[in-house]
Structure formats: structure tokens, C-alpha cells
Image 1: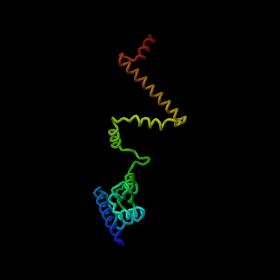
Image 2: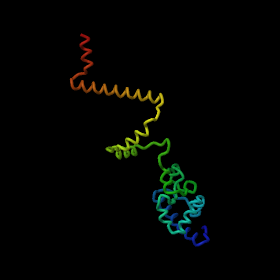
Image 3: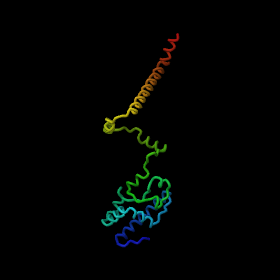
Image 4: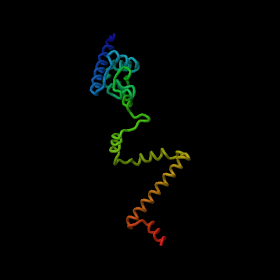
Length: 193
């Protein structure tokens, strides 16, 4: 076990020992393998020298707990999403980060897709909500004045043509349902006589 020299270092060791034990208990309660010894935990802190010194300073001024509870506080966290998915806590898969940085580790990355369950939750949360007029105006302002490429204009034109064709077909179908037959079919029968 590493021995600290000054009284302040001993206080910091005691504080970090508590953080180590709570991190271990949390990860094991989540069903993960916690393979980090106390000495390795200290190495992780020493790698983040700035965090370590900031924590030491917070200990000196007595506001360490308030700091650690904030989003700027430090936690033992996964290096990346792949490490999280493996679920093995080791000195190679974990590092000391701010809480804010830790929250982002498992966010969606480029190329990731939502599961069907996630899609359902998103749909349920958004169903029935409407954007405020201020939001609509902000979206409009951000999009106006943006030049469109020739390919984009062509795609937009084709999509609009398809929309109008579909609308005409739906209108004709609805009219046919009202009249009992399709109006174009009646004209075809008359011309064949």
C-alpha cells in the first residue's frame, strides 16, 4: 500500500479509499468484474495529475464533497463505449474523468443505431408534442438562405411530384368511393361504345 507523507496526503488517501470502495461496490452491484487493486486505482489518479492536484486543493479548502457531487466532480469511468460493453473494470479499461465526461462515454456514436425498444420510447415521448412558434421560427431562420445543390433541388422536385401524384390518386379514389365507381373507368366505358 502506498504511504502518503503529509497529514493532507493522509486525508486524501482516506478520501480516495472511500471512493475506491464505493466504485468497487457500484460496479459489482451492476454485475461487472472489478479487477482494479487499490495501488492501480492510485495509478489512475496519478495519470490525471491535474485532477489529482485539484482534488488535493479542494481537500485543503474543505469543499471536496460539494465539488465531487457536482458535474465537475471526478469519478472512475470507462475509457470508451467498447470497454463499457465488455464490462470488465481494469486499469486498461477505466480512467478518472469528470462526471460530465463520464455521461458522454456511452452516448450514440457515428454509425450507431437505436434498438427498436429505444425507437419506441422516443416515439412515445414525442407523440402529441408540438414545437413552439419560437422553435419553428428558429428552425426556419437557420434553414433560410442556405443554398441548395442542383442534386438537392432535383430530389426535392421529384419528391414533390410524387407527393402531388399520390394526393391526386387519393382524391380520385375518394371520389370513386363516393360515386360508387372510378370516374376514369366511366369515361373509358363511354368511349368504347
